[in-house]
Image 1 (tube, rainbow, N blue to C red):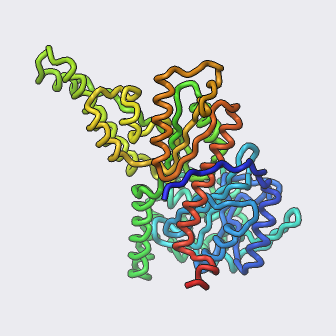
Image 2 (image 1 turned 135 degrees about the vertical axis):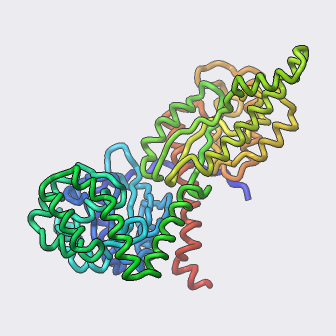
Image 3 (image 1 turned 30 degrees about the vertical axis):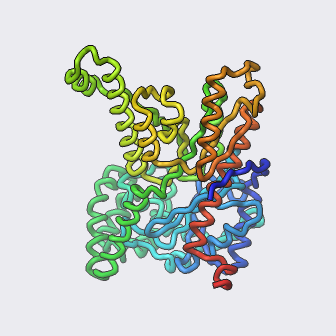
Length: 464
């Protein structure tokens, strides 16, 4: 079924100071026990981090996602999960001025590439109540918060984040016995004491030198105590990494088409910051075909007679088009490490519509064949400056060739699964808002379908 996405009117973004109390109240009503892991000092007025880190029990994940899906004026536009956490991307709430989306991460274990070093049960049992601005929520104990802030970067990431170090050091000094009690089970007393001493002394070099010993100690103790579980958790972690990095489902592409001068670049540049936190990475990609290298062209031309210039140009065009196809599929699988929303101005599937625009001078049948082999964007947005026969934005009447190509693009886009055609003669800000609404609608539909398959709503369960 092909679907033309109709732009929605612009909605107001819910300030963080209103979104947070509503979220916490809904969690309480649904019986979701949670703990805010860090960056809560400014709550509820502001969020000091780029996302919201919340610890829950693994069994409460479905209910927590149900809360997000039911919040009024909030849309869940992306979702991904790893071995011990899941990330939900919401539209309609903002943590900073100029943004309209926010990322909420749910953790059910604090682990390092498989082995767990802090459990949700331990964290929630030791958590303390915090009251701020009429909002009440749990936060980790000072010892647990310091261990999380340090080990999340040192043990897992292999680096020290100096932003959190002064607070971590103070917590290690003030709560030495509690920190040792938290570190001893996963790392052993010897490694725990060496780490605590290094942090207390403020010796950054010594801390970085403990990265390898800490990882070895954590993995060995995990395998010795629970060999089966440790092996399974490690395998799950690396499988989740492979799935996250190389699955085509982790990338969403929006292709914006239109003739030069219709404001494509300005619209994309305006959309990227607004859509920050609609996915882990929001960026613009240039997939225009690159010319064949000098060596490739010399090999092609050297095997042909100098009088066959047209044939050489045709063959080199075909080589470039094949390279473009291979490069697009390579980027589809290996071009990113996280859930990515990317914008492109050109797409290989359009090769047969306007081959000269891509520098292609080969056979038409070959262009049509390649066009079918290119990965298809998830949403097509066509900027139509003609407006059904009207003048373009600058007041000039489009040439017959421009009108012909625009009509060809219009017919082509209408054969795609999800598309929207926007009147580019409107002000750029208006066109950008319409494009934004279409993108959010596409993302929300995809995410709802994904979650409905994994976490069916009560209505669907009752129907089944």
